[in-house]
Image (cartoon, rainbow, N blue to C red):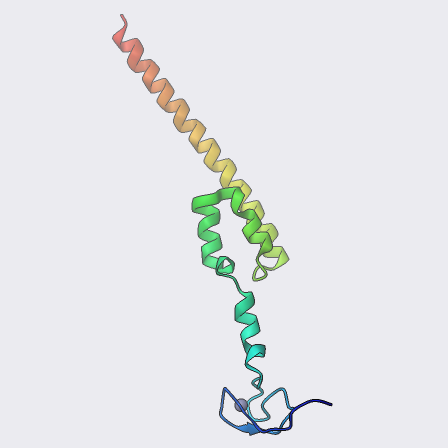
Length: 117
Ligand SMILES: [Zn+2]
């Protein structure tokens, strides 16, 4: 047992604990600062839920789906749901674009035919 037996001060509530204890007996916060830092360190900036959603719907479209699937904050059901929504959104967007292109093309054709007698 190489565990040091010095007293530790709780970083959360300031209570002193006996040496070797991993968690505060008063508030259950971890004495080891690396324990509490591990979770935020694992959370990457691109795991921010709103960032992923904005990228998904306004920037990347279906190309943003890897961000969703790699994100540990999304549950499996939510990942599948977002994938379906993104695909539907993309199909709708492509359909809309084609309608606009068709309308513009027809408008140009009408304009051209109105010029030629
Ligand atoms: Zn404490």
